[in-house]
Picture (cartoon, rainbow, N blue to C red):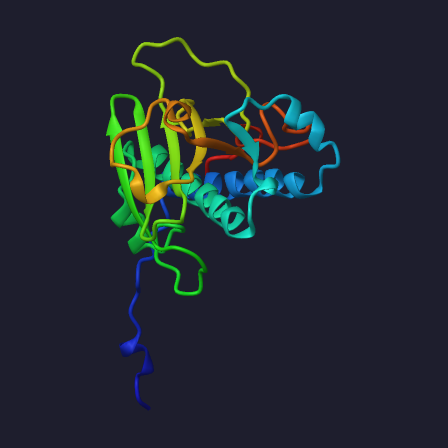
Length: 225
């Protein structure tokens, strides 16, 4: 009788690290939050309430063309992926790393309609920009602006919402999404005050308009194994 056990060998299987698992969980949690915001933005009937809180340079995404609504959704996904990597690595990922792993909108999508964009990540002090410049003159530019707290600053006690995202280490970020109609004419540089340069800030719902039942990432408990 042939010994069939001689060809069997043990293969060690390493479990994923707790940090990696937390990063995955927080990405899912944040994606759920953005999904809720976007759902509410398309179903809320009290749009005038949100509009009353908007400044002249602000608007809600449901007032924009469908192609811009798609870009806004993709930017929220890209932002959450970037935040997850910032939480787990301590660094903001560059555009090439996000594109290589297929993260929208940084990865080219052959099915997408509209202009093609050249994306870049720049940083100056506590400000981080993800900027997309269109390849055609009549398309808008896009900007995700992230502001981290100054070193030694007291904890930010703001509640998490569209403009306040909390990292795994408790760092509260100020984030915003912007668009500019003259995209092809813009020059590269770090934007700190986009409204001064003609940018328009976009919201899914509006300032401080997240509903009382909307979950936020910090409310989703993760139990370490």
